[in-house]
Every structure is written in C-alpha cells, then in structure tokens.
Image (cartoon, rainbow, N blue to C red; front, side, top):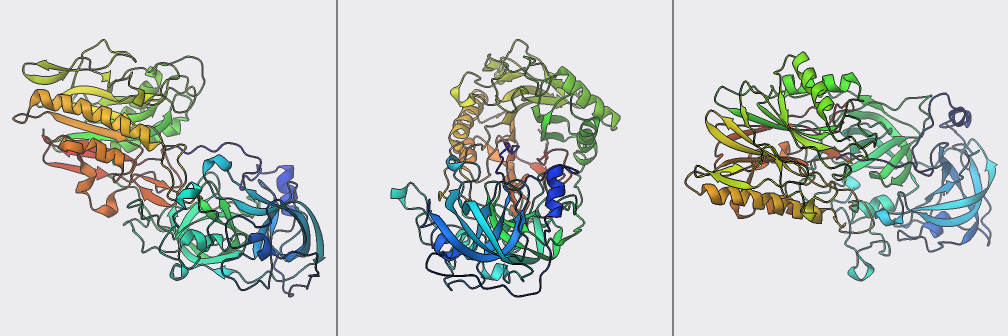
Amino acid sequence: MKTTRPVDRRSPFRQPPRGSVALAAAVAGGLCVPFLAGPSSAADGPSTTRVHQIQGDTRISPLLGERVTGVSGVVTGVRAFGARGFWLQDPVGDGDPATSEGIFVYTDEPPTVAVGDAVLVDGTVEEYYPGGADGGAQSVTQLTDPATTVVSSGNEPPAPVELTGADLPRRYAPRGDETAGGSIEGLRLEPERYALDFYESLEGMSVTIADAPVVGPSTEYGELWVTLRPQDHPTPRGGTRYASYAASNPGRLKVESLIPYAERPFPEANVGDRLDGRTTGPLDYDSFGGYTLAARELGVVGDGGLERERTRPQRGGELAIAAYNVENLHPGDPAEKFERLATAVVENLAAPDVLAVEEIQDDSGPTDDGTVSAEETLRLFTEAVVAAGGPRYAWRGVDPADGADGGQPGGNIRNVLLFNPERVSFVDRPGADADTPTEVVTRGGRATLSHSPGRIAPADEAWTDSRKPLVGEFRFRGETVLVVANHFASKGGDQPAHGRFQPPDRGSERQRLEQARAVREFVREVHEVDGARRPANVVVLGDLNDFEFSATVAELTADGLLENTLDSLPPWERYTYVFDGNAQVLDQTLVSPAIRRYELDVVHINAEFADQASDHDPQVLRFRP
C-alpha cells in the first residue's frame, strides 16, 4: 500500500525547493531566534478575546465563524512555506487543562512576525480540516484573514509543555455519541483520560520532547515518528507494533521541522534511532499522521545501528516460496531500484524457489497509453537478479485489461509468479486471459487447474478496480503445489485512527471481505476434490492490505481451510509495514492443512528504513511438500 499525497496549497509542511525565492524569504524571516526578555503586556479591554475563549473545551471553537479582535499572545513558531502562518500563545492562560492557550494564525502569504514577538491579532475563527472535511480527520482551530500588530519583540516564548509517557493517558480515544454519527467533536475534552483529548487540549501550544525513540522512519516529506511510550508493544528492532484495533499506541507523535531545509536539512532516521536532545515547537495536526510537533528547535538523530535482515537458504528438500511488493516497478525506474530489489532477492531472501511479486507495472509504467504487457519490466527485473548472482527466474502471469485493476493510473499493476526452473517446474495450461476464470479440474483424482497461470473469479464484483488473484500450478519433487498470489484492495478512504470519528469506519474492509470469500471458496473447491486423505498443498500469499487480526483474515481462515503462518511467529515479530509509526501486518502467507511443518520468516529490509527499495518487507515460507 503506497500512501499518495495530493498537492494542497494549504498542506502544512511542503517546503519549497532549495534556492527558490520563497525559501530565501523564509530564511530572511528570522526563524528560531532566541529571546531573553519577558513578554510585554497587551491590552485586554472589553473588545479583546483570549485564546482559550476561541479554543473552548471541545474540538470545535464556540466562536466559529466570528470575527474576533485583540487576540494577544507571544509568537512561538513561524511557518513560511506550505500552509503559511504563525502560532501565538497566551503566556497567562485560564488554568483549565481542557482549553488550549495556543492557536495558529493562517496568513496565506509569508508571515512578517518572528518568534518572541508579542502581538495583537484580529481575525476570523475557522475550523480547518486537513485533507478535506470528508476525509474524517480532526479540524485545526485557527484565525484567518488576520490583521496583526506587533507590540514588542525579543520576548521569551512561553515555557513549552514537556510531553512524557508518564503524563499520557493509556486510552487512545473516546467513543463518539452514536446519535452524532460517531463524531467526538462535540464532546468535552478529557485530557486526563484519553490521549487524543490530551493532545487536542494542547493544540497550537508550545511543547517539547527529549531523547525520543524513533518508531517511524523519516520520509521524503520531511517527517518522522517518535514515541513517548517505548514500552507499548515494542518490537525487537526498536519499533512499536500495532497489535489490535484497541492497541493504537498513544505514545506515537509525528515530528516535522519549521526550519527551512536550506538552513538545516531534515535528518534521515530509521526505526531504532533516537531523536536526541530537545525538540520544541507548537503542536499541530495533519491528516497524514495526526498530531505533529512542528519543531522550531530540532534534536539530533542518534544512530541506533539498525541492519537489514537475511534469511537462511532453503535446504535440498525444502520448497521456499516468497512474497514481495516491489512498489510500482516499471522500466522507467532507475537502474538502482532494479539492482536493489534484485540484490535483496538473492542475498536477503536467499533466492527463493518461487517468488510472488506484487505491483509489477506495464512496460510504459504510469504513462496511460493502453499498454498492458509487462514483459520488459520482468525482463529487466530477472536480468538484474542474474547480475546479482541469482538464478535465472522464469515468470508466468496474465495481463490485466487496461485500467481495470486499480493502482497508479496507467500502470496496470498485477501479480506475477517468478520461479527457478532448476528447482521447481511450472505446469502450463494455457488459454487464460484477463476475463477467463481459472476453475478447479479433476485429473487423475487430484485437483488441478483449468488454466495455469490463471485468475480467480475475475468477473466477481469483489475485484472491481482491484488486482485479481493469480494462481499457478507447480511441481516440486513429484508433489503438486498450488500458489495463489494476491494483492487485495487498499485501505484508501478509511477514516484515520486519529480522526474525529471514533471508532473509525474501515469502509475499504468490505471489499477485502468479499475478496477473501472468493479466494477461500476457490480453496474449498480444491479441498473438496482432493479430500481429507490426500489434501492439496495450497499457498495463499501476498499483500492482503489488512491486519492479521482483521475480519479479512478471519474470513480466509474460516472452516479451517487455511492457516495463517504468521501465527507461528512471536507476536513482536509480526509486522511487514510501518504506517504512522505503527509497525503492522499487511503482507501474509496462509497454507492449507496439508502443509503441516513450515517455517515463516518476515525479512525486515525496507519498512523500518528511510532508504527503501520498496515500502513493504518481504516474507519467505519454507516447507517440505
């Protein structure tokens, strides 16, 4: 699953390219200058409004839509790029832990104030929903169309609130009132009870963290995730595991920088590193990741020494089957990507006998020109494997209908089966195309395929705008093994865990449930032909885009037709992807009861690292048919 980010002029952290006029203006704006004097007092007459009056004790301002005047405070952060503006904070406050004393002032143009300025602001109260109101994110209370007066400069900003795991509630979110459609916006904040309320009560205020463990690697968008509670569901490699829908890990916090990248590039960080020293700035909110520390002072990344894993080679009588999402691979990708993916196949995955790959794009990549063949993509990939010292893989697949399988427009991503013909043979039963379903056919009293390779129920509505499962029939040491390569529908459109609807609606799950049923029914047909005396070897694997505890996996494993091999691993080893600082499962391998003794290895080589060849970690299954 690749998270894409549409261009949004108000997206908060979109720094302009180096050397641009806008960036030069940001540097000249005087960011992050320390001040020693105390704040000057500002007039607080009958016509003025205090920040806590605007914020109120719920997520929605009681003054929404009103024009307020004389809002006083000290500037605690300036953002001269993306959603440009500044944060001000009332240094006195009202003493109510449910009402924030900070607020963002949206200026549209680069702001002319500096940290430490005491200001008076007139503006209109707005609730801004990052990503749009329909996305389910929470809103940011802000002032728009401001008229700002600088009363004095050089003041010391208000002391930041120190965020620690000890002060953070263990419960993540309140449940929304059912009569309000599940929204928590109208509920009074209970910062001592819920983590989301705790963060919301500090929205816009200056906060600080110290020596925070990194649990989500830095990204191309200039962001990383830390945790205030490293004891929550830790992984052996320094991450925080998403163990259930009730385990949202409230200690996670996103960090981005207000410092222009030309002045200080955003640091590169892997899971297991540490953001050493103090990181201080206003607490913001973003649809991508939730609550965000907008750092005016950024700590230094300490190297945690994370290394990429390697699995062991399969033994002579073992069949090794792997799954790997190669993230929109196409001939237009740089040679380095092909080389890195191929090296991982050879060195980190120990050259598996069968490799199910997802997100193989057509030969023209994202160019939407009607091309559906992926022969050149696969040639480049398999040649790169040979160059890396691996076997010369053969491949089998079925080209999709143009534009019918979702994914990046024009790319026509599909699942493909690669195999080492020196170790395993493929049973070719030609004739399938994008619309031809593969059926279970009895031959010699055993279950075989009508078409190999072929697609499972491609006309089923479950696969609308989604990748169809690819099934192939293999022979290894005289035994038949059916391999089903999958890439279920993405989580796009789901409400975020940090959003205003609690519990969030996972609407995309409904399609994956139908997809799971279709695959399970195919496995049932195989089982009914072969019977219990000599059951078939069936492996169902790939990017299922869902968790090991999800209803999708429960559907696949219903009636005991399939077993999830992830269950054989210790819980802390169960993750293949890192999203918003949560190490989680998206990729899985399931087997039929005939495969009794097996070994699964999730090979961590991508998801925890800033430098990725793909955003998924592959996995390898070894067994003796």
